[in-house]
Length: 197
Image 1: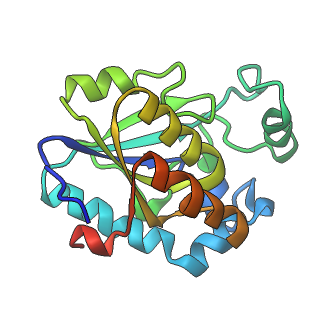
Image 2: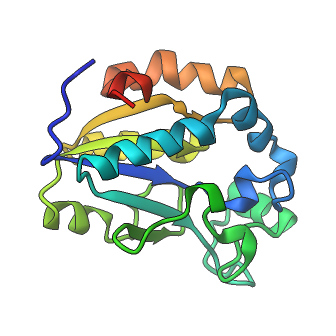
């Protein structure tokens, strides 16, 4: 396990929203909540958040939110899924962070419209302002928004640490491929336990 310098790190929490992670969420049919429940993703992420706050590491929440008419959604398959499920509408319960993982007033929240946490957001500006070059990553969906964010972070010269017990996908197969064959080539893959939490 690489040593994390708390003065250089930020904890990035991707799309931990009710519509995706709650069994009553609008996108529950995708099954991410079921995988996350079995893998204890939420519990592990809680510990990672506690670790970050204890060590004065900034906690940054990423929220995927759209206008009620989805005029700002992508035109591809992902946009189609959003419209069909009516998920992640701004101002709704489904678009909010799960109660178990709620932000505190001292945390940061960044809203996005696309898979990458960097695309058309102020995340990079925020990280530079905080003087953070290492991202510890948790969130969903592993093979979509998490992977896209990891790739984008590497291209922007950030150091990346993925907590594999704090991410979830729609299936074991979808989870395992990026964890085994993508993330190790881009950064470090470890667990919340190995962070010392």
